[in-house]
Length: 108
Image (tube, rainbow, N blue to C red; front, top):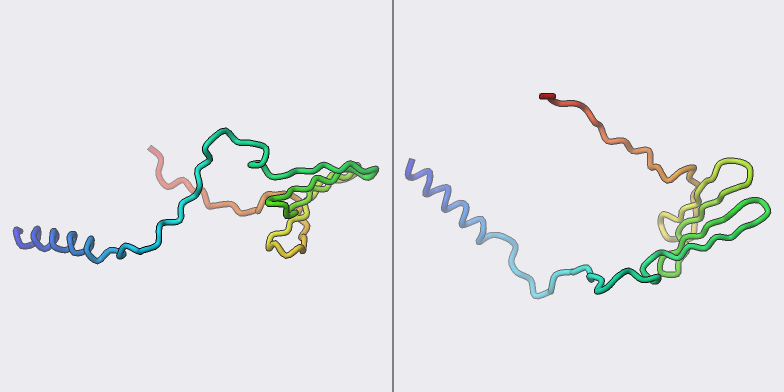
C-alpha cells in the first residue's frame, strides 16, 4: 500500500515537471475595455429605405459582412459573407438549424 502511494505521488510530481515549458513569448491577451462602451464599439448598421422595402447593412471594421433585406411583400432574408471574400450567400434566417441532442438520461 505504501509503495502504491509513493508511486502515485511520484507520477503526480513528474507530470508537473513534464508540463509545457514556459515560452519567451507573452501570452495573447484580449484587451479589456477601460470604460463604458462607446459608439465605436458597436458594429456599424445602416438602414436604407427604398420603394420595395428596406436594406439593413451590417459592417465590422468598415467591411460589409451582412445584409438584411426586408421587402414590402414577402419574408425577410439575409445575405451573409461568411468567408470575407465579398461573395454573399442567401439565408432565410440566422438560425443554423443545428440542434444538439437533448435526451433525458435520469430523472430523480
